[in-house]
Each structure stands twice: as structure tokens, then as C-alpha cells.
Length: 425
Image 1 (cartoon, rainbow, N blue to C red):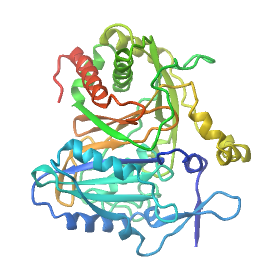
Image 2 (cartoon, rainbow, N blue to C red):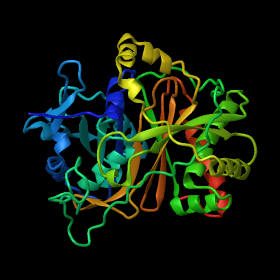
Image 3 (tube, rainbow, N blue to C red):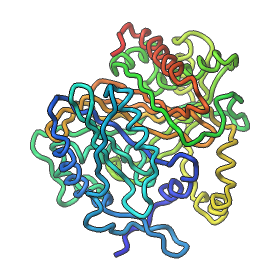
Image 4 (cartoon, helix red, strand yellow):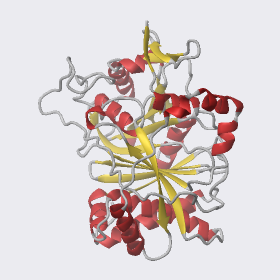
């Protein structure tokens, strides 16, 4: 039986998956403890994904209308869960390489648009879970909503796609519920007709990707922000732009500011646990000159003064002219030559307390994103149980200075956090 048609925002994500790397998002869950039963983790994944109706469906195109969600078959869930072994030495870098490979491997468009890989072979005997979703399924908040239904004590939650509190929704007494909230929507409205500065960081991306990650205590980041009247979002804007600025200076490029495209949640609070794409983008011009404190104060002043609105997906983008542009390659050429933004940033507020999966504690939660167009550095931040993880997706062919970029990210975090006189995690 044919299901619901996909929404306008989801259709845009579906149609614009035309780059060399697929439009997929994900996360890495590192489970603590030794001797974890990897087969047991697989069984739990199959069981819990089986409770999420959308994850047993696929997209079907009929005629010229929007694709519809239809059942993919009884065995479809089990077929999306697999096993991978992390190569030696089984450390974080090796795990991120495995996760990035899973993220950038295109999903089969004729089946369910997700995959879950259980990764064994980690140093110390641990196990990790790599979750990958096509962007048509969910934005960042939707992905966190999925996570909230996969973790322990969440198997009785309402199926994804239904509103929280719908018939059949329940939760065992005392079970921790992950907090999923949209980020602060305040940002600087970039002046019209003024684009991003031209830099060597804006070149067409290819299929290869590398993921880096740096972490800090969330409380330390908040404390640093308070010293300049800034939010965590403001801090992240300064950090990611500053890291890119350091890289440019090493290349001999002197730039006053960079434009960061920030993803901003536009979904209503009562839809926070649903799937689909309810997100806008907001370009923010971030200064690069001056101390970390001066730059943070400047961004904070601007965001307080000018609270703009995110640019939501236009319904015009799903009209015939837009589809023709996608089909003929015009859209891809446009995004590979755009001059509006230098960097992508997504910031998500994740679970505030520690989670468990299949009886094991989730010790680390790392977001995964894929850059597109001519933006080879895409950052994603996710807070979890007091830690803020900042990952960066890098095209190593466009940015071969991968380790230098990671060092720059760590240095920028350290400089900003030092404003609050609190150590890095």
C-alpha cells in the first residue's frame, strides 16, 4: 500500500543528492566496557529499528508526483544491519576512518535509506555503532530523535513519524529521556549582494572524505561564552572560522572574515521528535582579526542586535524549473561555483545525561556530516552528557593539510575556552 508523499524539504534533499559524495548524515556511538557481545548489539539494532515504521520503508516514484514511502518487505530491516572490523590499532582515528567510509558509501535507493554497522576490533575490546541515514529521512534533530528511540529504556516510545504522546507511546518508569532541542536561531544577517570572500578553501569537492574530531567540556565552553555575553553557537562560529582562518594564513592568504552557513532548526517544538527535514540556513560573517575574546564579543554583539530568520526551503525549489536544473546538471554546477559561504556548520544539543545501548554505556557520541558543492570543510557539533564534540568533514584532495586543520581546531577551542578559565576535556 502506498504511504505518505515526502514533504517539500525532504524532496529537495532527495533531488539535490547529485554530488560525488552522497547526501548522508550519521553518528558514531562508542560503547564502553570490554567483552561486549557484537552479535547481541546487532540483534538489538534489528529489533529496535523494526519498531520504527519509516525504517522498514523505501521510496517509490510513480509518475511525475513526489515519491511516496512504501513498505520495503519483512526482511528489509535485518538487511540494513551489518558488521565491520576496525583495523589496528583500533583507536579513534581508525574508527573514524571506518565510520567515514560507511557514511560516504551510497545507500541503495531501491531499499530502506539507512544502514547501521556494528564495529568490533576496537582497542580495549569495545564495540561501536555507526548509524547512517540518507538526508531525505531526517535533519539533525530528526536523527537525534531516532537515537532517542534506539537507546535502552526507549523501546516503548512512540514510533518515529508519530507525535510524542500518541496512542501506544510509553516509557518505563525512571528511564532517562534524551533532551533534543533546536539550537539558538540568532545569527548575523549577511548584507545583501555581499558574498563570501574568495579563498582557496572554496573549490569543488570530490568523493573522498576524512573525519576529524576535537572535544571540550560543555560547561567550559558555556563559561567562556558568558565572559563575552555569547552563546555556545557564537563560540562555535568563532572556533570553526578561526580554524579555517589559521589554515588560510598558512597558505599565505590574508582574509578579514569568513562566512559560515549555520543550519537552524525551524520545526515546531511539538514536532521535535519527528522525522523529515525542518531546517533552514543562515549565513554569518565571522571576523578573523583580533584576539579570541574580541572576535567572540563581536559575534555576540551582532547576534544580539540582529536576530534574523533562517532561510527556509522554498517551495519553488521543487517546481519543474528546479527539477530541470537538477536533471541537466545546472544545479550541481551552481553549487560548485557559489560565492555565498565558505564553511558549513551544524550545531545540535544532544542528550544531557549518559545513555546506554544493549546494556553498555555510550561513552562517546560523534556526529558525521558530508560537505557538498565547493565547501570542502563542513563542521558538526553535538553536545552529549557534558561533552561538546566538534567534528569536521574534510575533502583531503581539496584540503591536504588535514592534521594542520585538526590542530587549528584544537587550538581555537583551547583559546576560546581559556576565556572562561576552564580546562579542555
